[in-house]
Image 1 (cartoon, rainbow, N blue to C red):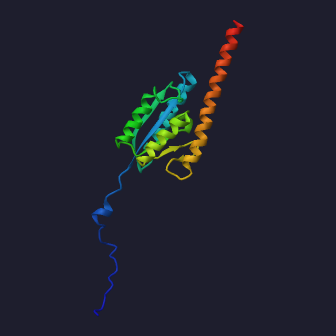
Image 2 (image 1 turned 60 degrees about the vertical axis):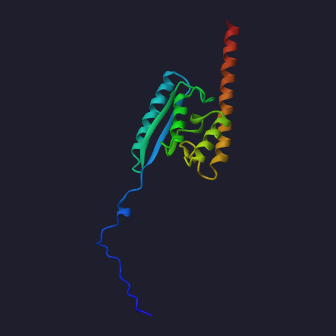
Image 3 (image 1 turned 135 degrees about the horizontal axis):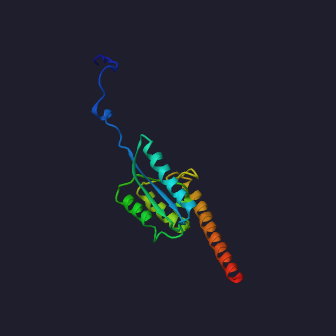
Length: 175
């Protein structure tokens, strides 16, 4: 058997081309929504858009894939949420690698819709990160927590709607 000579690595040699190339940046989009057109909500809407533009742009591993924002649109139904639907289409077209939203209730207030879109994105290996709850949908515990939180968001929306209806009915009766 021949003698084997071990040659230590030369720290002065340049790295191979494969090592030099950076991994591609994650294309991250944000979804923002406010449900009414009040001045207070308008400020929240602008704040969400500014926050996520900066948040995504300041992460060196991310590139901004867009801010999708529905202003004055209810979260109980996705039919009239044009920006939400446009974002889902961009995800399905392979233009977005990750979605960030302030909270589950901003993403959807209907449990079935919420789970439907999360599962649709998950099948494409696209996580949704809910900042307030700290939930990443690709985590194992994510779907259980999302189911619970989405149910609570839906219940809150239904309760608020009922309170508004009762308030209007009371005012109508009072003249």
